[in-house]
Amino acid sequence: MTKATELREMSDEQIKLVWKDAAESLFRLRIQSQTEKIAAPSEMRKQRKLIARCQTVLGERSRLAADSGEAVGVESEAKVEVGIKSK
Image 1 (cartoon, helix red, strand yellow):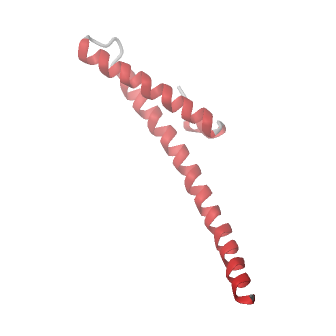
Image 2 (cartoon, rainbow, N blue to C red):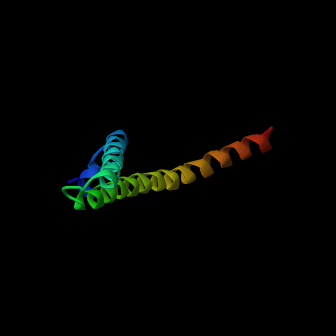
Image 3 (tube, rainbow, N blue to C red):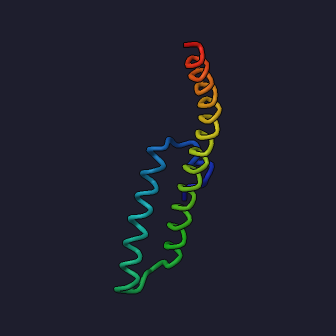
């Protein structure tokens, strides 16, 4: 089982691979649940939670990047405006 702390230590690409594997596994479990009895029904819940953890960590990172990007973007926009006024 992959905890959120373990996911936070991974790179974005690794998290996306874990997410993809969990989504494929959940798909297979859903198909299996429709066609036959699943040996471990709790596995579906585990996969859904793992997908949610991946989405949460990636969302945190994107918000953090956006917040730091906005601060940088404001400074660069100010420089552009100053450059336009001086011409």
